[in-house]
Length: 227
Image 1 (spheres, rainbow, N blue to C red):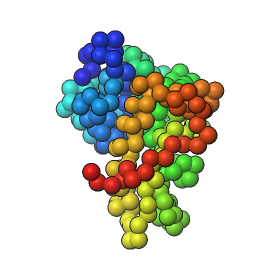
Image 2 (cartoon, helix red, strand yellow; image 1 turned 180 degrees about the vertical axis):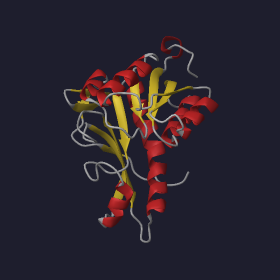
Image 3 (cartoon, rainbow, N blue to C red; image 1 turned 90 degrees about the vertical axis):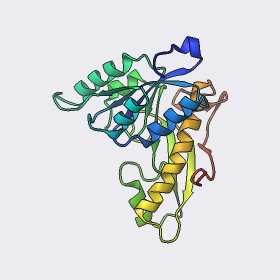
């Protein structure tokens, strides 16, 4: 999957960053593998050498790299090494799929307008961690996930699309998490596909879809349903 050139395949070269199990990575790679998503997943890169997402990548024949934070003086130094690892694969788009570290300003600037992230809430609600528990504690009727371009502001870059997920009576963190994950695994490949086909760009701090700046994120309904 990672050896073809984009010129030969018409697919956008992508590097995916992850820290954990890599379930979003797996959904993206599966869509790419079936041809429904026109991208070339060149590598999975993690801050954790033992991340299961790297094992998923290796099983698919995709390059898997680890750039652990140990041994670097600070975040900026680590991010220089991380960028060098990513750039070796010459991606046109960097996809953050559960990468659990904050980037330096220089790193964000280096990938400005070509780095996406998925966050497990309907931003701007519940930025940061533990979003499912916080949604339950707040008595929220709706939860979900959001895809946005990455900027220096934590979970605050230009919003592209969201998938609302109802909070059901009796929901636990586990049941709500499972439904949000189902929505994520459909929403993220969809948005990446928009970028890969030239429909989506980021310009002047705004997400632009089909040539028009978005005044609100696109909402895709019922993505949490089992298919």
